[in-house]
Amino acid sequence: MSDFDIHHNGPLAILTMTRAHCLDIDGKHALTTAIKEFTSRDRPRALILTHTHPAAFLVDVAQLADMKADDAEQFSASGHTLAAAIEAAPFPVIAAVDGPALGGGCELVLACDLAIAGANAQFGQIEAMGGVMPAFGGTWRLPRRVGLTKALEMMFTGAVIDAATAKSLGLVLDVADGPAIDDAKALAARITATSAASVAAIKKAVLYGYNRDPRDINAYEQKHFAALFGPEQSQRMHAFLKQQAKQ
Image (spheres, rainbow, N blue to C red):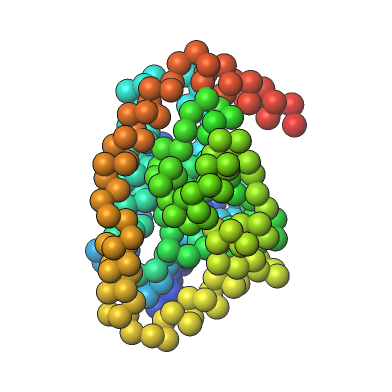
């Protein structure tokens, strides 16, 4: 798995994304496989999901710009599969983010149980800027994390918020003074001092009660995300790619 580094440190496992756009088509599948392997084999007491590449928590807009609706629905489905694998893991998954986590990257952070932000982290559901909508569970996870009206404002406007704002809204647990990974490790150490069975049972119970069947919402997201793929979406995404190329 050349796109990722996996490191075990006693009861803690660290999955590091090492390239840009780890939420592209191949990246989502690879991440899902890795998390399912942790769940089925070497169960850590906690897993930190982090990155070394600043654009790791981003999708590849170039893959989406000319995508057809059927492919877009599958793209959305693979994001839901990844998020479901994170939630099904019988151990806490902690996101440690030091750069932009936008669109699908923000949804990946929301799927994790806890998140620590570095000072330079940014978050946002920016899909409306590209003529689409959140497609990996963001339409229901963001409101549950930051509140309905704030989530609607963020999604309607495509707003990007900084780390301090993300903490104030409850999107992340804390903002680290240094690299987010350091504070994430400290948090993981506090978790691993408690009962593994208790933590697994708490996570399962909380998600069972809190996410009363999001599968219907996910299916709705997939279909309506895919339906937005067409001339306006393609035009917006190509304009975004041209702007990025100039920077």
